[in-house]
Image (cartoon, rainbow, N blue to C red; front, side, top):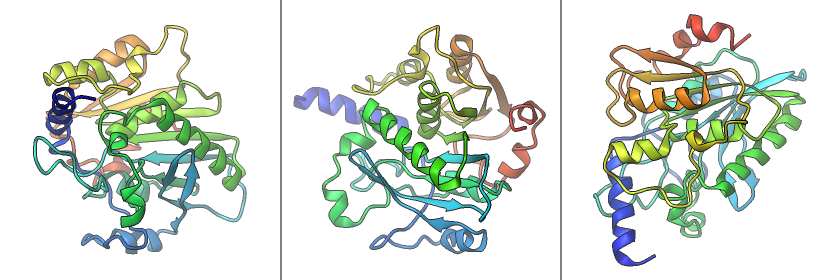
Length: 285
């Protein structure tokens, strides 16, 4: 890629994710966050569980009982740390706030897993080997979706489960939908503040396209998606309501607009209540 296209791609991604923060998880050699999220994982029965999938070492947490679970819920993290300048991505995409992980902690289900995104929560040495394209223009690439496909297979064996529910926050919601489109064992999908119409999303912000990434809104008309509910905040300027509406017109699903919420506030804080929303009671049987 030449300097000009690269610069355009970096400016685009910086604009789109400059305010986005997600969850905090620590592996060896990464700092423990100030919000006590690690203590909460221990208190709520989560155990650290990393998975090598494709070229990626994906960090995660798992909560399970001794008994087999017919189904489990997988939470997929958002895109990560904000950009420090408009022209360069963060050196480490590890997110700063515990959105998706905190959502997983608030889920009362017995069988729950949380997985970070590529290149998040790595040691310094491992991070140097991880191409920044995986948290910039190729964040939704086929290789990334294939890695989560492998993760689901591994977790199904761990839980002795037949089915999975997918929950994705922000860019993690894009991964969840793309993953559900190619599997037959996904029972339901929930997304939160997710830019599901990727092409329209970057156009909305006047940004250049995410070269190499897939777009859920471009899935074929014959694509079968499981029952899905898509949450969006009424005040979300990063992923505004029309972006989610556009995806639903193309691919179906239910939308829940939450008054007063933006891209970060207050999904983690209110997640246990949102799981009781009437529109998703039929989905989360």
